[in-house]
Length: 430
Image (cartoon, rainbow, N blue to C red; front, side, top):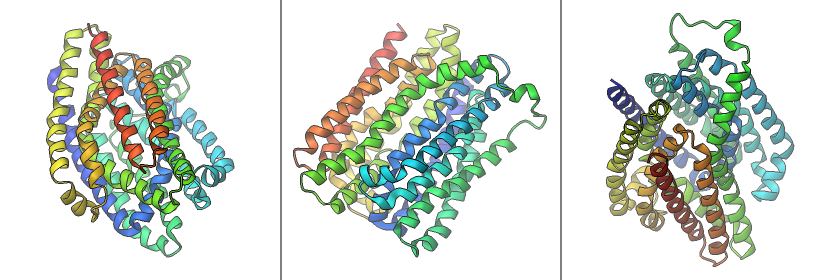
């Protein structure tokens, strides 16, 4: 029964992930065709800040809630709904921060004052993302994956429609207005997701005062699990946040033009990385289904079953990752032309594709460590990997090899973090 539930959950997430990945690809195609390489480059310049702020706004709450609900420790409704007011307060603090410092980030760090408004727009989107993530984590904990899949699909459909209608309108006001609108389009899609998730709540579902009253123990448990769990993501996103800042400042200093930096960074992070991470819908589905299963089994000291599920997750990740890598190596030009209508980035793909086999198994390994209560270990591995990445980035950017410095930095970091996680998963299960 446990096995069939895990397989069923994984299959649902894989099918849903495939659909949302296709929709995401279409969204990317629409964005690329409408705003061009320059627009994609500008959007990718603020994307690291966006990702970092999302992580800070969530503080690992979704992972913690999913784990606690899976272990069925008590009042699950209280676990979910009592944390929402705290989440909203955190989001308000981030919005206030952006009101005061978005100009500094745009002008002094990203070297483009016109990015101030898109950065401010990021703050408006965050509360909606946080609430939908918290609601989604409840269904993950219950191993009910259909609500997650349906909410994701409808969310992407609404975002696609919004972008098709809105981008041409805002482009008439300038490229930066169009970028701001792309950010704000997330509000419409996240509201859709929240409505869908509420629809999937049981018909007899009702909230009492006890359910929404903050429970000190539940909140403490959420923070104790959430903060270490989100540590890896925060560290990764901090590195991602500083990435365009470091690249822009070093390359400008050694003689590259701002136009070259924005264009090449847009090619690498707007075309190459999304293409190489296409199989991630599969590994993400496996990781999401794996977390509650491993958490439940490990809490019962069922080491044999835990090992079996982790091995299964890695096997399935490689099952899609290896063929995908072969396709990327042999048909990069065709894929770039069909998806993005460009031939830019072929050389980057040929170097990075083989290393992404390790990237594909990194996600289930991280989920395994988090589910076993070893989130601090995952965070430490990520921290060391980030230090390696930033150090490598500084060294190779100064060798005047353009964005190849970033390619080398990504490669070394991916190798270290994956090998670190493999070692410690094996250690904690022996």
